[in-house]
Structure formats: structure tokens, C-alpha cells
Length: 212
Image 1 (cartoon, rainbow, N blue to C red):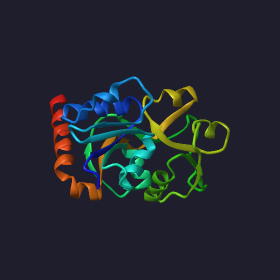
Image 2 (spheres, rainbow, N blue to C red):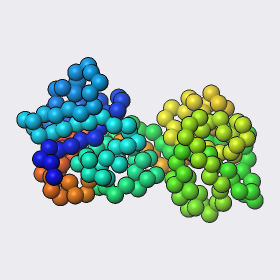
Image 3 (cartoon, rainbow, N blue to C red):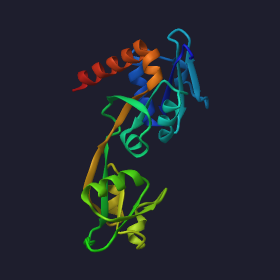
């Protein structure tokens, strides 16, 4: 096992905010802020290695051991149930998983409900808990147009401001679960690199407490 602590960061603004937390925790890596197209950055002094990956892939890198720790959205953890430890709710990237429909839609419980979503497992679990029969239509993009075109009755998707829903004449009818970014760890790494990982976790937790 590498002596470096390998950290998978989600590309984009969320990852940049997370890196700032790691930097304050004493695991800085100045080269990550250089303007280039590199994806992997090392600081041999702190024995830390960062790499940028697609947000939805972070949990895979951590679960498979390519990364010791990383940051993934709660939506990914619920949908794919990776074998990782969830160490800390970072309280950033806040949004919610919700059911939305056209404003004039009325649910007829005698019919199977058609649900369009990227999050098939979350949708299935939610409606199973309600005892509602559904037909899941798995889509990868432009979920909002499914009810408009008659493909589905409702959608299950992440909602931040709700602007996209309103612009497409949709509204939230039920909230399923709040979503935010979580610090996660590979299970084996947590055993063998426990001191480093707990130092980061505890430092970030302290940072979050100071912000309250």
C-alpha cells in the first residue's frame, strides 16, 4: 500500500472548496492551484496526492482503493451503495432529492405511476416504502421534459433552487432526502492510514464548527 495519502476530489467548484478544507487541515499541495490541465498533484513533504475525477466517480475510486479518501454527494452514496465508510457531512453542496410533476398532475393511485429519473434505486426505495407501484424510466439527462412530453407522470431528481423546474412548469410535490457532500474513506485505508485520515476528518469537523 502506498505511503501517500491518495485523495479523490470532485472536479469543479465543490472540489475546490473541499481542497481549501484539506489545505487548512495541513495537507496543502500548492501545485494544484497552478493553471494547467494536470489531474494528479503530489506534495512529498506531507505525503499527500490529490487527483481530480468526475464527481460521480469519486466513490468508485475510493471503494476500489485507488483513493484512500474522497468527497462524494449523498445522492451517489444512496444510489450506488459503495462499500466505503462515511466519515463526515461537510455541509456543502446542499440540495435535495425530490419528486416533481406538472402543476396540474393528479396522481391516480389505481394506475402504475411512471417515474423518470437518473436515480433508479433511490426512486424505487422511496416508492417501495410507500407501497406504490411504479414504472421506472431511467434517463441520463433532460429529465424535466419527460412529463411535458408524456413520457412520465413525475420525475425524481436533485433540486437546488427549483428554477429549472419552474421554467418547465414543474413543481416539487414531495421531498425525499436532503443531499450534501460527504467525506468518505476506503475501508482498508481507514485501518492502515487511520492517523492521517482521522487528523483530516477532525480538522475539517473543527472548521465546520467554527463556521456555525
